[in-house]
Image (tube, rainbow, N blue to C red; front, side, top):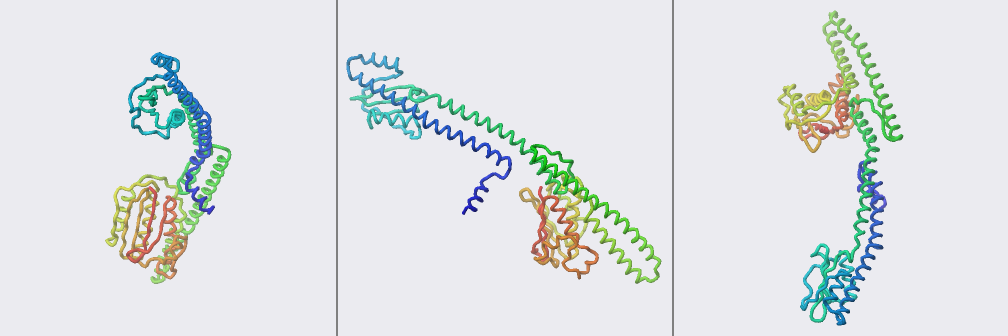
Length: 439
């Protein structure tokens, strides 16, 4: 149960660090303001409002008693109460002293006024309206064969300090949260920059030297990332230089062997040896392609629909059908994408007769599907075929000409662009290759 509750709470929390940090800062401030507001509202404002209302009802009751006493002139009495107590009152002879009006049970003024009038005047002997006039309260109180009509300023029953208190408690809270947002933005920006640099480097992009900034811990992480990036680049450069030297050293004796084959009089022997030498050259080229440094190619925005069309047109193969939506633009390394698609189409042509290629767009991704009617790949080998130098069946006729790097290179290129490649059973009874690339 606790695990499920923790998971539910985690799902409610924001994913980004900035918003989580903002919650840590803002929630205590908001809770504190709410607590202070509730305490003030309950202990000060409501009690003050209750006392003022009680005094007002007492004054109204005093006026009615004095009015019934008969010792004073009623007009003079109304004038005195109007001048000194701000009670504008008039007696009207009418049985219908109340009017239909929707009661506001949520209003503190209405609740307090209703409670005091009910306890001092009676249940069905009063009627009041606090909404028809902006600054006045209209109260009718039944008396003998008529009723008293009171018009009382609203500030007689409510304190204006409540609004000032709400203003002063809200503005500083908003100011503090705004300042916290600015500081949090400055503190999380170095982390975001570090994450973006790591993401770009993970995709194989050539990034400029990363400059750490921010707090000491973030700077330390940035420095370690920069050291790691330089070590990886140094390792890749050393590998490329080593393979370049090996390539040069191996091509020289292969060239000499080709030259010597031309002097061999036995034609059959010469052809067999020539096939072996050509096979060695093809394998050597495949090794170099796998470890080449073309991953330093700059990113560019290009039309992948047009690129796919051009790749298919180069084959001039009637057995390749296509369904491509036009004008789909993505940011990446165009030559590497072309190489990966060419590798997949070459594999399909090698093992199948019918090939179907589809390119579509969904949300922020481009989806490329290649179906064929070839011999396919067993389901338990779907992940293994992407391993370098892996071959499903070494007895196949092309096993000597290939070292098993084509799909590995393709997978590496797709994933370096932040995409994914999957294998499935094709509707054509062959192999289906699905490529997902972010736009």
